[in-house]
Length: 286
Image 1 (cartoon, rainbow, N blue to C red):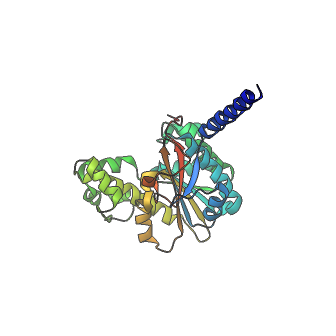
Image 2 (cartoon, rainbow, N blue to C red):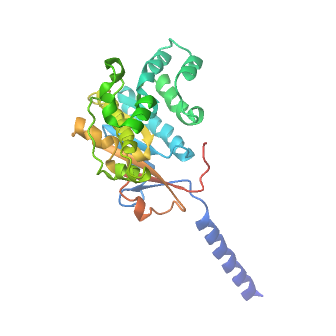
């Protein structure tokens, strides 16, 4: 009887240990080489950067939760030297953001007139309103979508013929191109060799880089939120920003989904200086 009870407890402990190991993990943070790192250690380096890119998965709730937490923590370190910007807001909507922050227009008017993403209310509004509450600069960094659409059909050369009053929303023309970059090669393959498709992405990346550059003052930390494709492997926006200022200290946080978050898959190494891994079964925001 004593031997039977001993076996029972051994098996019970064994299965409890298996269940504990199988418990889902919401997220893990890794270095570029796959070493597990704490949130606090990551934030120490981020706090010393000139520009921090958070490369998100647009419908991932962990991304959006961490973005607002990181904004709060970076504000605790930098206070009014923190600048926030995002791909989700276009340069011709900057005046609406400014008027809303200064109290000239209501929140309702702002949300009605700005071309907001469908998940704005849950995913981006908290960060925008945090910046408003603490009187931080919030920069609409992305190109107006009408120009990206135009380039996707006609190529970057089409921008040259725009009137001067349209070009105020764009970076300096002509825009440099490098189709050999991995990010644009990927898009070129997706488009079956149609180079206009990656050129539209180049326009977005160049505009975001220019927006960051022109709004970054000495001593600032610019926290920029964008889809991970725009900053993975330090390409995209970073390639254009290095051309404008090669001396900036830039840190990339990238996000990936895996079957399990406990270990970084080799394919995801080097995507960012820090890689946030979430389970592929994570619930989506939209």
